[in-house]
Image 1 (cartoon, helix red, strand yellow):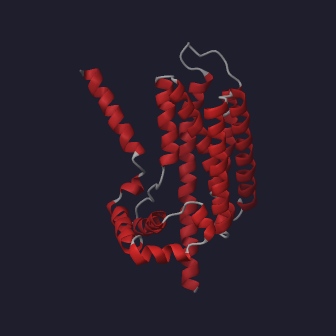
Image 2: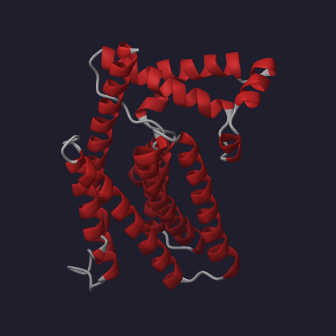
Image 3: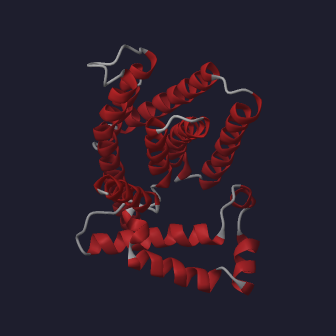
Length: 269
């Protein structure tokens, strides 16, 4: 009975995590999204939204609801800052989904759980590349970021389709993820080095990128489990936990910087 209760608690906790980030669950944010959808996402208002929506956003799958969620995210962030609270995380499902399937796969190794673990890992790496594009290019040129997102989605779809429908090739999957990881490493590092004097908080990003790619050697240089319990893969998972905490700290600092910069421009206008 106790074991069953513990399992139920773990499942409930996992479900709560996957349901969204703290910011997604905020009543202010939810109410804002609801009112925005009622006002803009039906009837004539929806037709107006679609008529003025750029073609690249339409092709990228950006919906009226997505637009409401984006606008309401910044409204909620502004309220948090006014009240002196820490900025909450929004839309954290990609990383959480990867961690969830990784946990399931390492608990029960089946064909399905293995593929979900591998596919979600690829999605996380591509998502990091997309974040880099948004931060380095997309803020000034949103159309470029939207087009790049569509390209990454096509690449992920092709990758998953090949592994699922044609041949599940471990070597191919490894090469693809390493290649994407190298692009991620070079792009983030180049941006961090370029902005290291103007934005001191990018040092956190540099540390995260270097640590993650250094720790990835554990995935490539396998060794027998320590005490027959901790193998290289397990140690890699444990080691990445504090790194992701540092990355979220960087994202928080960078978001606050961008918000202050935006407010300064509005005052000048």
